[in-house]
Image (tube, rainbow, N blue to C red):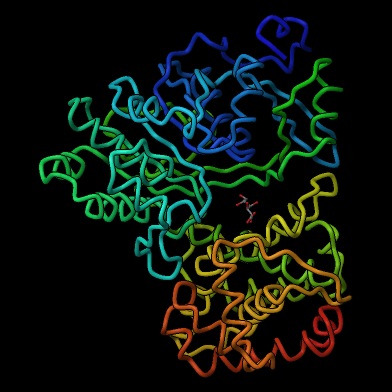
Length: 487
Ligand code: CS2
């Protein structure tokens, strides 16, 4: 697909804006499938409805292939919306440019210091923030530490942000909003915390730090759309719909939601015209989504992978799983926080289960299971902590922790190997190697990972016992029998 093939596309698939004609106003870090099917879609629709120079310069931190392919396609890609009722494919014209951070870091720093750029959005996944999942404390790996303390061109997300903001301060390039679109708890505050700690770590001049405090906002967001990693099938479906090949095609469910705190000191696209909700405080929405949707997703992923199920939709067919997930929502999640006005957590949970059951979305359990150490706190552990604060016994949430602990040991119920794709894998492996291998020993060893488990939770005997009981049942009987016996 290229600009000159657009006129051959079916009319309903053509971009809503003229690609290449909207000037850049946004830099987006993280060029994965989720960004293309979420913020890029909203931004294109917002520009089409209300105008504005809000083209996106999309930055791939690492993947050169992504950048090459998009460049060969004149920055165009398609999004296919998949449901049992049928599919629809749209080419998105929101990208004003594509860049490879690792290949040309100076260009990214220069972009962040460009007055035309007034918004930076991020989908870089939880681990790229380099914050302890349990506490939000910056724990820079050697690459981040080198980015923050030397003059070499930055290659990491914290490095790019800090160097970009310092350059912006020097250039007097005006205020800017940095918008985390990752599934972190209080993602706006986490990103602000990252920038503050990274500036300190970098020993940035006080004047520049003051400039950042006065000129940069960090609106919190809730982002939602199920968008699995693309496969050869995704590309084939797009090609059938478009009549031309699209090597950057992505596919997602019809549902999408974006709640954004409206703190943009230099303007923003009219995202509300594309269906986004602009609000003062996204906290309630964010907790609703992280604890319910993502909590159920992780539960389904770990239990499903252990039971040998390939996809989330397959896993949902494990007998008794939906019953257990409904109890997790009704008994633990719904009682753990205040949802936004007028929202029933139980009804929201039902729509989530319907979405997971979408038979044409092939979302692999091992994909959702990945990076569990970074995901568990906001998805499950905060539910447990909030329930324990009022003296309740959050049994179903404890089951999810036990399922993760069994998954982390690397064997499915039928003995086949499961991959532990996690930035803390070495630490998890070492903790497991030191344990005696019994459920109680494994639970003690893993609860000792202070990066993941807050002390209030690790030291709580009620929680420990709940997890040990579930892990004992999972070890002895496997997922299916454990769920069948869970009453
Ligand atoms: C999933 C999310 O991979 C995962 O961990 O739970 O990517 C999920 O699909 C999105 O948050 C849905 O909005």
